[in-house]
Image (cartoon, rainbow, N blue to C red; front, side, top):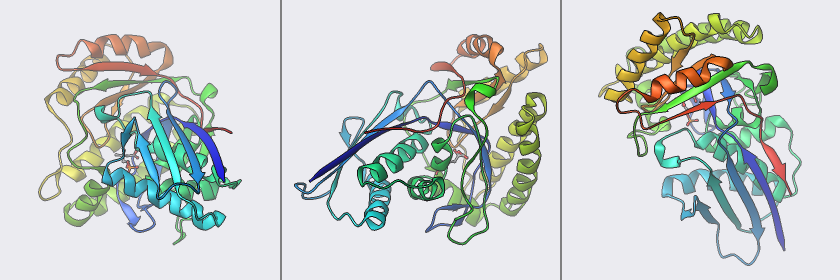
Length: 327
Ligand code: PMV
């Protein structure tokens, strides 16, 4: 017996960050988040359940999966097997059309595509909440990549995470913004987000203050996002990212994701903004800087950031769709 399905998903960038877990086993977030799904990059994942395989076989970007990636994928596959009653091993082929090693958050698109491909290959037609739970087993930010455009993922209160389900605030075609990504380093990040969040929770004196501030930021951000008010959302987004990094920097030992080029780009963003260009920055658990701006200014931002010494590549992005399934 062979059952196969393909899914395509895109990365998303958090405008209000998820940083911290309220339940590590269920991978539930301690903070709600707000994100923009992108359009120009994608992960294609094919899952095939085959009873002639001795065990699960995972190939990510043409290579056997690392032990860490392997464990995440197996968590999702095992849950699909529990839900469907299938007991056979699966073959997973997943490819990113963007450099995974460049440190961009590829786990979100990868795990969203995996959740959809695996559940469909198993013959399941899952609702959004169940799919979100599946994607979350692989990565906390992955449920957001199930949907397109501007997406809100509530923290939720339910111990099982039943209310931690993404909502689309505006589909991509309604969001008149661009997001310019400036790559400032190669290679995977030194400390992955799960370890980084746990280290921050356990040792940063500012962790509780971060949770508190993040709740207030999200409340305001949802109002601005619904109104598509970039002038109000931008500064809030930037402050929220700085608060996340401040909390991580205060961990013991400190967690610093930035490099010298990160700071140079940050300086340049301030210079350009002072000159009248509208755009605000955010940074995830890595050294790259992303600027949210009006769509018509994205090229100008991209050209200016590409000139900063040390920047490896710049990519202007526009909002993109949610996960797409194919037979
Ligand atoms: O989903 P994870 O485990 O890769 O964590 C994502 C963490 C951040 O990218 C820093 C923030 C976010 O909300 O995407």
